[in-house]
Length: 212
Image 1: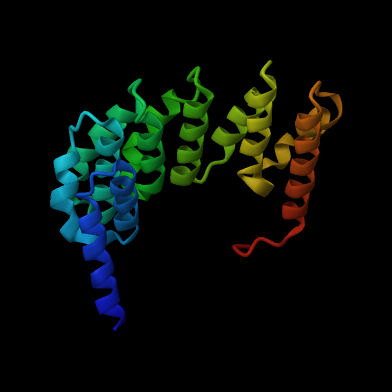
Image 2 (image 1 turned 120 degrees about the vertical axis):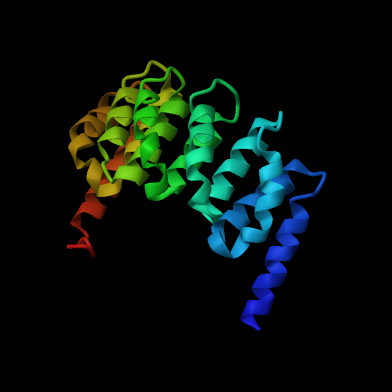
């Protein structure tokens, strides 16, 4: 029964790939990507999205195909990297997709490193998170987060705090800076969020690491 239910789910999702509603199409592609090799029947439709004028559909298809079957990585990964380095609205989707691909996306690491200093905080944040997922090194996230803590815009500082909290106990090296923000920042909301982050990171740090 379980196999039949899964098959129905795949067929239903493939049908949604042909919907007139872009949100429904993209959502279905994401769910199919999560099924990995069990969703190979979706690849022909997804491949038809590659090169689409709708850049979100384009990068969604690239990421989904590579998650379902990475045998086309030599051809498709460069297209995903190109989208990540472009200036169109699909770039953050492309960066996020790279972070999901694991070892398949390791050739994209140099490109992601180039995006760490991007003037758009959403791009630099996405790139640092993707690098963390691919390499396990939290330094990228921490460096971007600390930089944002010094931003003149309170919202960017707030985002920087959340970004540091993203790596949990790994962000203990940023505790001193977060404590300073919790006391000295001009914005009450930022101060409060920094204090919450310090407490959460320290609580996380006290928990035993299951990998140790």
